[in-house]
Length: 433
Picture 1 (tube, rainbow, N blue to C red):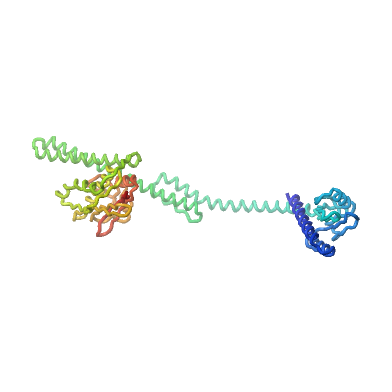
Picture 2: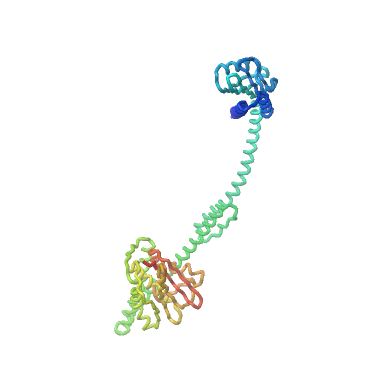
């Protein structure tokens, strides 16, 4: 491509020279000024410039003995043909017989009697191309060798952490907790991948731990009522059958444990349906103030028998839109949770703060605060901050998980605040209509 590119460049150079002289020709004050300009341009560009008169054989040449100039019969023949063709401009390549070199000629007609012929030798291009080709071959070989060497070390540096990650990922399936995802911060993308795998590893490890706890706790909660039902049934059959009072007490225990077992099974089924996203919402408008009062009426037995205090001081009507049955389950679970973990004063406070765009509902108890590290995990199934299972006095250990699922179905914001000496507050927000 170099010869054609060189020829094209030379053509543009000669065309530029001719156009410059043409502009100066029409603005000159005298022929002396014009020929001075011709000499100046020829000196600057190294191009041979010939000014020719069509009516005679008189030519003005900047340097007739220069290899750039085309002279003799060849030039006269070309000049005659160009003048007779009546063309405005023309490009021509020929062999200069004087120096036997390849020469490019670019011609322009200034007026009916004056013509410019610019010539430039193309001979150096052949040797230049030959030298450049050899240089390119040598440079290409050197660059390829260097590229292979650099690529080898770069690929080795890149592949080392990838191989380590691959090995750690394979071990992931065999061992849940894996600490081999620590990669030096050298490559951003690989580091990000390592962090992602490390995060996934922690989440899977936590999920596995929760699964084990879930299995242990569910089996415990299923086993305990079943054992008691069986034991008291045998007592009714073998020991207390003739004694009406003891028999009724034992039968009541059987009924209570059956209810607990039924409650547990219902909670597990409810949570399974919610997590599968198959539960349908039945949104309706209702007075939330009356709704809370009606729920608290069901806790009168706790006031009478166990001296619990339920504080709810709101008097204002509040119309909201929600699934009434599911929201009822939320309040029952949160109040039951507060009863289970409240302090010795046995005070549970339900408060509603009416804001401009929402209602803030808070259920407070004065029990031992929840550790900060456990606040995010208490919504998980059967999560215990002390990692030891305690059989619930009320509920099944799935209450907060059900609360979470229901509030997220409603798109209600929720959370928990737990501080020393103030107890724990579970809250959620309902948008105002």
